[in-house]
Length: 281
Image (cartoon, rainbow, N blue to C red; front, side):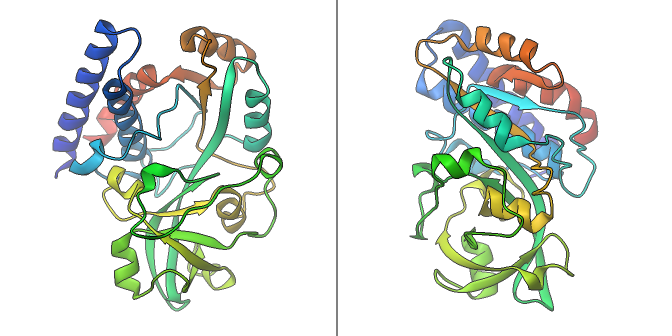
């Protein structure tokens, strides 16, 4: 599918989602899924410069987030994202401590080189998150999660879990399965220093990207990228408490964190379209 086709598809999804939001203040499950797809699709399309695949509507029931926090610049023309948010773990912990926030977590995205031989590597997009969820629908193996203390602590200088989840196509190309190891780095030069064990096979994030993606525990991906000291992330996402109004919470967070752009999920979609459409075209 062409970039133009991807934009048309994304706009259609956004239109359906926002129309349902207007008719149903309670937000149906379908609305949440559609908005989440739109946010993630446009986000990765803009930041990584790749297309949205047609299967993007599936597997989103566990991925919705009420609030998205970003910071300029996220350069859509770069070979990856700039991950402009620093101190991400600490800020996420501050957000989670609020009475009106149920949970908050960072997301980081990098391009990485990986392979079974440090001298023979392929470039793939990598997404760093603190835990996986039911939506991953593993073909083999399992996911990962971190405890509350680790989630709130600054990332380590070196990878601690040394785990990775591969898209099935990546696993096939490399000839690996669960239990095998691969080398991973943000450059060909550094990949040989990081040997990760394949713990799961899932194409979850690949459905939002134009090429197969891999998933790595956030702290490990930051360590591999050499950004542990500054604790960099692309986004902070948050779910509001059950009795909280997400628009009111977003407004309060915008005042409390003026250095960030704080948006609800549907406003994030509109913003990404407005800011990135010319670049994507």
